[in-house]
Image 1 (cartoon, rainbow, N blue to C red):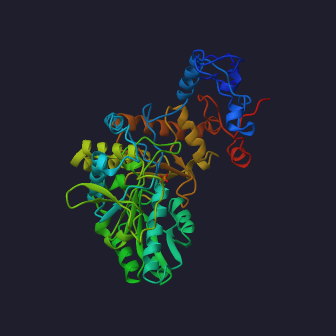
Image 2 (image 1 turned 90 degrees about the vertical axis):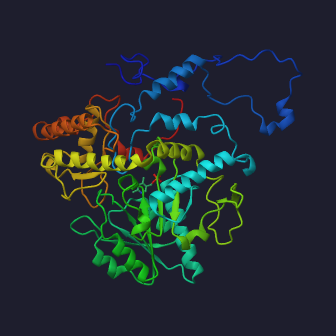
Length: 495
Ligand SMILES: *Cc1c(COP(=O)(O)O)cnc(C)c1O
């Protein structure tokens, strides 16, 4: 077989080279008509030090070459539109096409964010309707749509907690984080100026409430907890945790990235949460991956409302909407404009299309994860055996005996046509296989996935090398991940 970077390959998509390598002097994507006005001496107009004749090494290619290049590259992607994407914690659910249709509507896609509020009442009404929907789903009192990712939402939330506590005289020193937490939680706490203290999980995978009680003191600003947690297990002592914290003047922050397990069934505002973020790009179906775009709205309990980022969307007495910028206690502005509008439009389209049917989506997400749990228990080690919520976490303990680890199994899944699940997270499960099917998958697709996972388990026992050297059908095999992290090559240079 021709090497993957050879100009001749068996499959057009496999042999694609860089645009730079396709360049030939003088090729153009377009021709401009001859100038019919006097030409300007750019070097004279801008100053010689600001003008250049060209860009060194800039690829010269024709229009069709550019189109083919990017179209071929696009076929290298694995996507939810191609198959199941069981990446735990990431909630790679199907994004109904109606969301895309709505986001592209003229009048939405073409609005300018600096247009005055009086001329943007329709867009503001979309934002307000989404706010009200999210408040209803979470049971909270006030909300900001501004943060553009879960992590930025977390930062905004903890910054609000800090500002609130500071306004009462003492911002405090510590944030408590369970050992099963997503990495962004401790990172957020540190970025917001807090020390992190870990809370142990108990044998059921939940917060050890006794350990929590020992740790809550007057130095604790908040507990950051994901519910359901990253093991896919519901923190059923959450209301008790809230009481423990509140009794000592501390607050409860909930990472709501897993709201797809709760939406329409349980409301964090009802079990004592003070601040929470959601990931619209996970729970409310916006295409994501590769870094964005996203939206991480933060909902708060009444007493934190004055600290919301500015500007705050407000309904005037005459029913019109506008921005309130005069908020002396606010933590300030997080980013330009009011949020990732296109993502917010998609989330509202999704919510309105589902309506009360969202409860069914939530239940199906939980059912699908439990289906996989039951079908694979006995094949893969299950460190926490109780029913799960929207995701299930196995470990590679059985396959390890044959020298096969979770990464090998994940890579082998590629040969079966599935995107790998999440490996090595949560940290409290060594060799974790974290699987989140979402509600999008049919029973037939889940059965195919289960079949693939069973088949890989059999291979691991009979022919471990086959699994350890996977993938065999992908464009490229195993990447040197350590090398990529330690010695990244981020720029192409001519040979
Ligand atoms: C995805 C995720 C986050 C971070 O969200 P981003 O939008 O990627 O910044 C935080 N916590 C949990 C539990 C998550 O799954």
